[in-house]
Length: 438
Ligand SMILES: *[C@@H]1O[C@H](CO)[C@@H](O)[C@H](O)[C@H]1NC(C)=O
Ligand SMILES: *[C@@H]1O[C@H](CO)[C@@H](O)[C@H](O)[C@H]1NC(C)=O
Ligand SMILES: *[C@@H]1O[C@H](CO)[C@@H](O)[C@H](O)[C@H]1NC(C)=O
Ligand SMILES: *[C@@H]1O[C@H](CO)[C@@H](O)[C@H](O)[C@H]1NC(C)=O
Image (cartoon, rainbow, N blue to C red; front, side, top):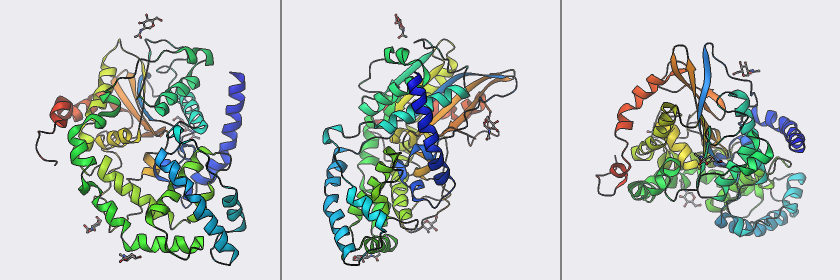
């Protein structure tokens, strides 16, 4: 435990300067890495207990995206082909082309990729730290809802049947309890079909009408072909010293690896591949992913977020049930987080996102809302004046759109979602027989 604390302390103080430099500098490209943005740039380090007069934090329901993971096997394989591109860039620079600095070239020269394809999507060491630290801070904020002492009556941990979610849960418990206690926790068995954690995976109608529907990707596909993206790819190619224009596909692989490697390698702080981008050219890549996810997991189709009623119902049920666990921690994936945020009406852009206009002030920004380890906590406060809830996203207190104050009467929330929750019938929503997508 002590060793863990010391290494944690070192890790935390190490993060500090990175955190500060990246956080206060919106033009730092590391703030624009979409769903691969490092959580250490977003997490809230202020873990002071959150108190309200005449209220007590009594329950918490929290949904958490797994921590930083390795790329999937397809991207791991794609990384292997970057070796050739790397050599081409180095060669071109020796003949005077390209704009990379000596240091950037050196970093590229030293770059290797030796990830085992069989470890695709595994949680990384940095991902473990993200969970340990997150758990620790949440416990400090809500010591009554999140007790120091483990009991299977007061805590519920649930994860999807994936290594990264399961390991995230395991390390999260390490942040909450004594190591020995954490290691001995027996998690409930993974459910084959867990609608609370990943409703959309089993929603046939969503799979057909949204996920596999080409219309969903129309705007993001158009954006790939846009003049803005064209110019970006040209600029990127020039910077790298290439004599041809890099394809969107390859540039996107660089963007992804810039994200992955920056996230999982807190020591080097920035991936060698980030050198391909500057503060202008990073933005279209960020937008491409915002656009794609807006239509697939966000406000684009009602069905996408309508299904999230299943998770939210789970939250209300856990708050209404005095006997149930005090602290519920659910470990899941990006797709669930985005659909829940959308269901709650958060980060809604003023206009639907499209391929012709990139609004730099848009609220829907995956780099902010759906990083690795992205999380949403709803905390039940028992107050003199009845039950209230407080919402935290990325550990910051947020105001839910239907509430007039941060600490919001539970009744207000229940009233707002009453119809949706009364009609929250998975089979009804998700069977293929039902009418067309709205
Ligand atoms: C830290 O959080 C507490 C509780 O939310 C708040 O009262 C305090 O002002 C915060 N401190 C700083 C330095 O932001
Ligand atoms: C909690 O643990 C006890 C024994 O340690 C076991 O009998 C009981 O079934 C567990 N309860 C739950 C809800 O898992
Ligand atoms: C983008 O560039 C390609 C060729 O590199 C060209 O065919 C296409 O017309 C360009 N699109 C736009 C919108 O400029
Ligand atoms: C794209 O969105 C902007 C901002 O809402 C809007 O002004 C523009 O008309 C839209 N473009 C198309 C082709 O719909």
